Length: 68
Image (cartoon, rainbow, N blue to C red):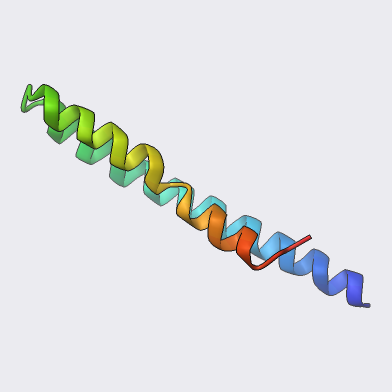
């Protein structure tokens, strides 16, 4: 029974992460299009740096919970 609860927990976190990733992609694409229209090279570099790292935060939180 304990392993069944662990599997359910893993599936729950996976589904939660996929929903987060889908919403994150939609929002970051919209912001990227807006920034791309500005033709500002420094702003584009900052955008790629921030949004390239930002999606990792939920993975770190899930890993911190030590879901095996």
